[in-house]
Length: 220
Image 1 (tube, rainbow, N blue to C red):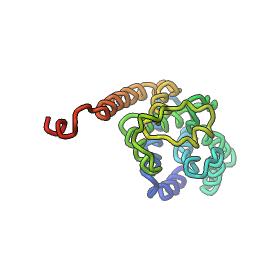
Image 2 (cartoon, rainbow, N blue to C red; image 1 turned 90 degrees about the horizontal axis):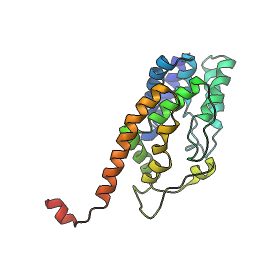
Image 3 (cartoon, helix red, strand yellow; image 1 turned 60 degrees about the vertical axis):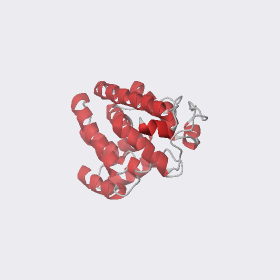
Image 4 (cartoon, rainbow, N blue to C red; image 1 turned 120 degrees about the vertical axis):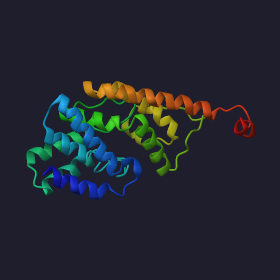
């Protein structure tokens, strides 16, 4: 049954915007499997949640954080899954997404923790940096505006509706992920990816604040 859902998900996401395309789903699936091998839980539930976690993402469906659960349930039932399994996935999927710096994550069983960790790990590190700027570009956001400071949002609505530049996304979300990873194996991966992002931001800010003229810089 998982392979039927995977085929449908792949077809649906293959031509989507680069930060949330099939390859993002595939990476989350593979990383979820790796974490599951260490942490345990129901493998089928992990795989289905990984495959369906973005099937109706609030960033693309008009801001509905709950719709993804209903769509995930429908796709599982269409593939011949049980009502119980479909219900389990439908309860986990809406709780995976990040909803603001000051918004507490909802409690999840180990299967949900694994997928949420895997999804968040794909948002940090080198691929996370690339995805952040790909998404920002798709929304016509500036790379950076030093006059617009980060905001630690207190509600999912404020977070969803914020208009800002891509570098702020690092401070409002990505740099906070390391401390919100729940699985022991996920924490190990997060540490290295977090350090890469910090180095990237240090280099970015250094390059942004070049004092010399372009000609002097170019000739050096």
